[in-house]
Image 1 (cartoon, rainbow, N blue to C red):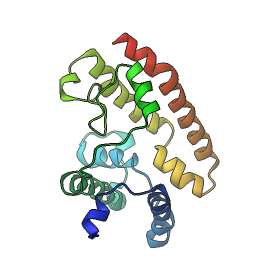
Image 2: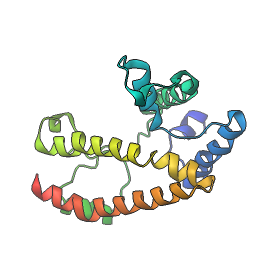
Image 3: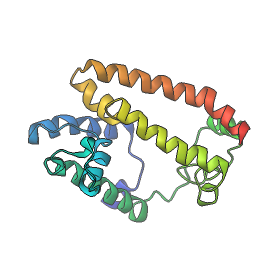
Image 4: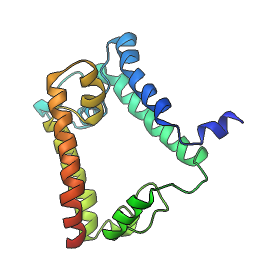
Length: 190
């Protein structure tokens, strides 16, 4: 078995999970850096927005490693999708397919349902709600919570941060409410 074949297969949880978890001590040991993604948008805005906005007035260059980390994720994602993609069909449990079909989602050919997240849906009410409004709420929520799921659930909980526990619980409650209440309602609406 070649390494390319191994890399193109889905990694089991007992490999991927510890690797993600090991990034926390690795970042702390290498340079006392905190793992997180959502703050990179602030750094990009601070670097690119010439306005004298107090929120963006700080030494963003000190966080350059975070921008390099995000760039690495983008490059890795491109390489993974273009050269290491799993050629096999995506496996979705029959019960999940049944639940999604009840919501009107029947195309399981991609990683994301094309009936929600496609180019054709961008300028529709459904696209506005799921892509524009949903994206805005995710961005607002991460800023309001002081970080995203990776920052709070992976980094914050491993450092025994009380606010991260509260944020992670709220993320989970939001996910359950969104999946069980909002999504069925929105799918009937649009």
